[in-house]
Length: 369
Length: 188
View 1 (spheres, rainbow over the protein chains, first blue to last red):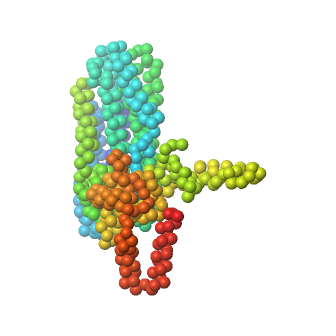
View 2: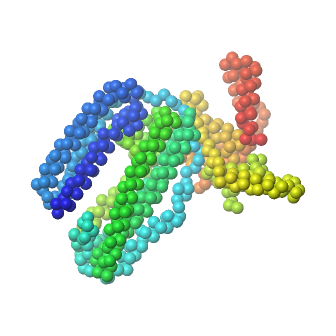
View 3: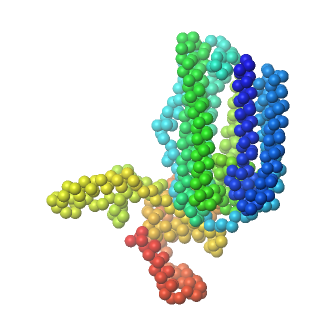
């Protein structure tokens, strides 16, 4: 019990440290190009900008220490509420956003307008087919559907009470009455997630790719590399998710029916392997993005290329993009790595409606447990 | 041979997938076709190796268009001119599919209508055809604009600019020759 408790405390601490680090480095990830989402001169960035940044960091760290201290006390005196620590994540995130916005307002007066007015675009047509492997799609489809078929086949054999939650030693620690919801929850979530990742992949293909006119060719090469990497990442995440969710779905059969008990070891190995691979993949992807950004900076002198008219449509220090004139759906984040949505595009609602499905699904599952 | 592979006799190259990426694989003419069978076997082996090497190290050629916010021409006209120039240079070949309006508009940060107008303009000149489902396809390297006087007009305007800029006759001639050489290089 104590070990589980410590492991959980450590997990929440790591999560909080990641949130703290993200907020600390968000304003400086693109240096003076997007300092708190604002383009400033190098003199400002290294002069008054540093002082603003240090004040921002000070308040972030103080808040982090406070939240952690309170969280630790609550955890020590309230053993039975390990999940209460989720409050620290919410507190830290909201505090981070508030501080970010406060200090963004201090940086805003130093904003300068990018004078460069020549932009290029590649005439290469971006097709989903170019980034799709049929064999991989078939494997992902099979891995998503087969566990559900196995569950349907063994459904009559499953006992009245089936395991729905496992501890870190892969022993069932919560049970529920057999019903459609409890048995098929995992495969349905798996199909839902596959759909979500496909939607994201499709959206990423239409990402805005403005090139600087001076170094269009080299710049495009790195942007293409970045796009290829994103597409591959989506594929790899999809296949790992299919394996992970498929395995977890089979775990119901293996834990509930005695003659399959020998297969339980495979589940543990697969879950540990896929989870570690997902983490490694995430870290590798982040590292590659940083390298590509460094190369872009070396080639074109800047990483973020956008027209002046588009630059005026970032809100909240580069956190949100709302531009009715821009037909793009996905745009690269002004602060941070990866992509964000152009909230003025009507097709955003497809994504938002799909995302609403997640809490609905979880709500339905919790109700049936 | 897949349908999107074509042999270009001028370039002596296979053009693969002209719709998405232009891959030219240069193939020298077969030595045995040129001369008698007495040609040495070594030449044949060299040809085979070279062809294999060229096939393996194929070149993907990318094309770009540039727009300038400070330019007095409207953006749609800049897009038209850039695409026309690529067609004239022979870089955008017949059958090449231009990017969808949405993609180009997003990349350049302009309204959808701007690119749609540009494509329509190119269609009116008979350079591209807009097909439902497959987008705008380059159909011809000959603009339908005819009549010498009409063709002379833009040239006269451009030359007037050069004269007004105070350039000497020799320099104007050299600029014209330079531009023409660039355009005709790919056109042959």
